Length: 475
Image (cartoon, rainbow, N blue to C red; front, top):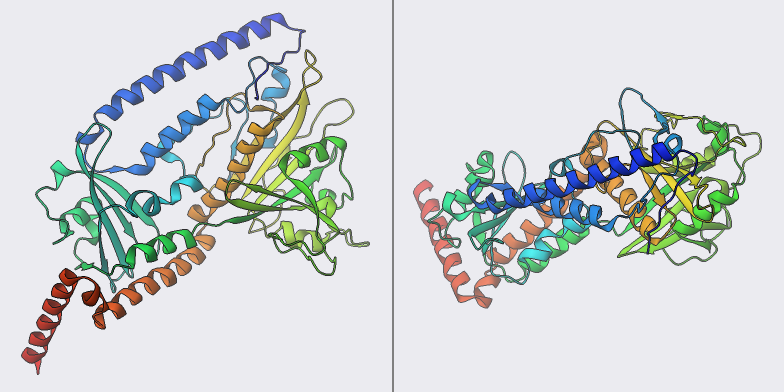
């Protein structure tokens, strides 16, 4: 487990204040959960709703109940609330003092929430529509009828464009009567009125559900690479940190929690761009598997040091191209830290920094805790799991789960917020979506669908007859 308290034993007044504040916070949380539950009971009559808000509320409550931070008492008010990173224009900081509460509806879906079609549509009765040419590119729509948790009829609708997937739950009362197999106009108008002017065509291709699952899974990364910098006592610049040839005992304890030390020579797993043949990027690195994902960490002290290079270009070539960089900051001999500047890494590609400090309790010196803050460029939207207050975590497996989830979602959130990365992602989505629709049209043109599905063949024959009549009118 990950339970256990901590206290400094020197200030009973501050400990009592802490306990009272913690009690009030938990009572407020219970009241908020009860209010949310009452609101969810009336959701079916509130019009079109986004499924992500519902799932993220569940995710947030699960995180709160999991108590990954598991600190029941104060370590030290100074340690808990001291600033890890200085404020700076163009950056957002999460994880110090009384940070503003991040609403569940503002959170970017976690990686587990991205398999919407796979989890809800595939294997269930549903219909698929598409339109191949519009000013916004090709569009694919999937829709199904179901009942929500309260027993009310709803429509689950997923609209795919090259920019994003739109996922909505539509109460049937707002669109009925409709026949899913005949037209999706009302659903499109309810979900996204801007797209209702386009003429969607139903596809009866039997292989389409498999193609859509493949389309969805191809957009979900299964490998991640993250940078790791060691910040020695008193260091504040990236040049100083990149020049570190080694780290402290606490730093390597933290690395042991993140993953396993692996030999790069002939390494068969995900290498994250590191050299596994000739040793040009060092002998070892840190790698791990978590859930269905594989990670490689670009650990700066483990990368080769280049003499007479103050910039350490070879090290920065890897960490400077990572979206997420972890900074482990060691304390000075007197136990003090210098706060870092939010923009100290000069890279257009790095969008999120996770700053970690180790701290100990005088009341329980045998336990190791971590103080965490997250810095992102202001183009990156908020993402789960939220850093709790107090932002203090016990060294244990639950913290590892929390921290890796934070790293993964930081990268995913960057794809949503960064214009440069979003543009690259959009081009990839356009290619994948166009490929699926091209296969559908080719199959329909060759009447392969009709040979498999008589009802589909009837639809195709009517479409071909209508096209022939239109040609005669204009010839």
